[in-house]
Length: 316
Image 1 (cartoon, rainbow, N blue to C red):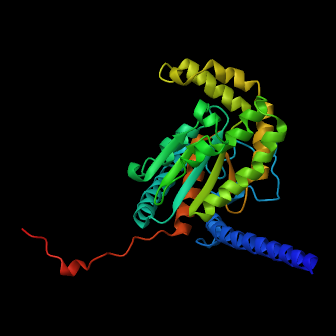
Image 2: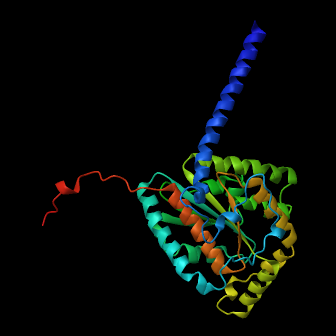
Image 3: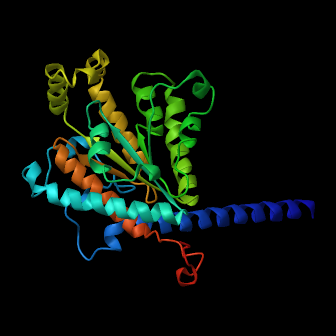
């Protein structure tokens, strides 16, 4: 009888665990609908065709197969100026609604090789955003305090509060990138972090934080050109670091590390986009449209007025 009771208890625990996972999965998939806005708010594929750059779960990508010079039908910067401004205007209006609603938030992750364009993306895509509703966090070498906590500790503190858009300029993915390439931790440690990151992002998703992640994909030749440009321009020389040259020697190792991160951590609820980024103006348009459509699919709403304005008289 005691064995039967023990078995029944185990069966009950397993059933409860399965139910909990199922509830979380359903909730995550509802958010995933928002992350595929072209399937819900559009009657045709958008221009630019940003969904083509989404890394679909279980469909592995090879970075070597993605041309960083791709720019679709656009030929030059002038071709996108009007459309980019339109998307920036959309972002401004939708961000205002998100801020006013104060129920959900948006986390945008930007990752790239050195000179990949993270700073430029922030400058040119988010120029119309109200600073009160947006925060940018850049993550460099961890402090002693940060190193004494779990690897996600410092990132979790910077995730967006309700109503906010937060941009991670570099992110928690550094802990499966640079630590791997530089052998800062053992493989047994960094390899387990893919699973931890997926759980972390699902937890944020279930907390009302929509996550969109962009890898700005440039070629090695383009990186060289940009580094040389910094050396030749006195106004850009401050951006140059001799460390950039040293990091370049790890190019192939970083490409493999990024590829593995993309394939292990692009989920329906927190997808990666591999954005061709040799053409800065095309990169900006792709990211602006993807974020604007995501916000529109989230459909934030202004809250209802607490009082009837017809019953209020402003005194002289």
